[in-house]
Length: 504
Ligand code: BG6
Image 1: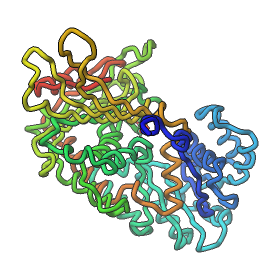
Image 2: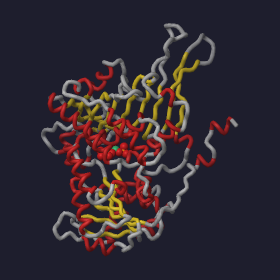
Image 3: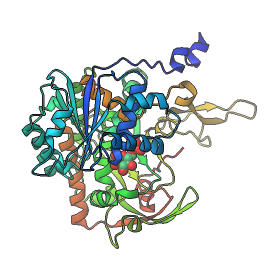
Image 4: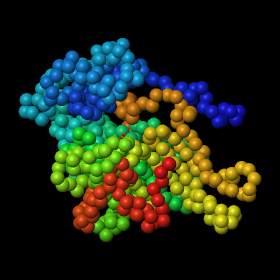
């Protein structure tokens, strides 16, 4: 019995994956030759096709301005797969049959004479079939593309649209986009993607919180001292400088990924996992976030930009060189001391941080519990408070740090050790990329892992206030050497509260 509890069952070890085929569908990927499509979307569809989940009469149609034909698109997709995804999951046989489903239509979507007719011709005329328009393109084009689709009669009753983040650059642009898209698609046909919600460990947050009785009674400001949410990256801005310099990490990572993690960590238990039940709980958290003002922003946020340095033993350039500009106030790092003004969380800080060119890539959520109210072990015995670390990536794990007695002679010595639930030790399944699950959810019509309109808009209001406060107060962008974990001032912000960033 105990052996069964300690080790994963055979079924778990395989990951228990079963692939239930979805209904046949047609997916039209706008921005089909772009980075996202080549790195994530086409590989994800290929994996699920090889897993037997995508029926044979489904179609994948790439759309972009490039003057390619079907064969050119297939070649590009294969070359990109091998370049970005490697050979581990590649099979020539499977690819050959997968690419039979791929087609390509060149369209300059914003041109007067856009070739919508070419797309109509490439699609089966069947109102019942699932039709997915995936807009992997700059958000300012979303509304126009949707209007074009409608005018061309391409929006069938069973059509849905997928919008890549970021939805806009602030509250007003998001509103405009949502309204434009909403003129063509009803809200329950709009899938606003945040790929963090498709990550295994992010979904595990829901299971951990609501599938175990142990945590819930302690999940509040009486037992928890503070929470930290980190999404650190070691990469720089790469070839995305022109987008990134207008965005910065606050828009690129915090408005979406980090706030979604914050919501899942702190929301109340939803009545069910239905889309509206989950999203209704998330929006309550976003609405309860305390707004930062020009008076509070300096003590509650640090903005940074990477300078030259060393990452993984290699010298790397500064942000300005990467982007090719002489001056920029764009932040590539941010740390924020957030507060949720509700009964469960009032009074405890939630530290958020994200940055590029940090020492390593890791995302984790740390729940730091309060110390025991009184130590019976005497003043000389060090007693660490409990900590729950949810490691989202890489090395997915859940670790609960506890105090135990160190065995052996020599008096009562305490040690802090983790109950360690490492995914790699318990599951041998291939971790699907977040996009795989999300794409299949779009086909199935499941909206729970996508953002509702009001979530996106409310998140922007909170982010806009920070931008505004930075502008009004003239808060500096602090430089930090690449390869270090952000500016020193971010450490100082926690030190002033008697705390420090957790790192395993
Ligand atoms: C994207 C951001 O949404 O997420 C990128 O635009 C960032 O700047 C990426 O690098 C991080 O995703 P992941 O899955 O690697 O943590």
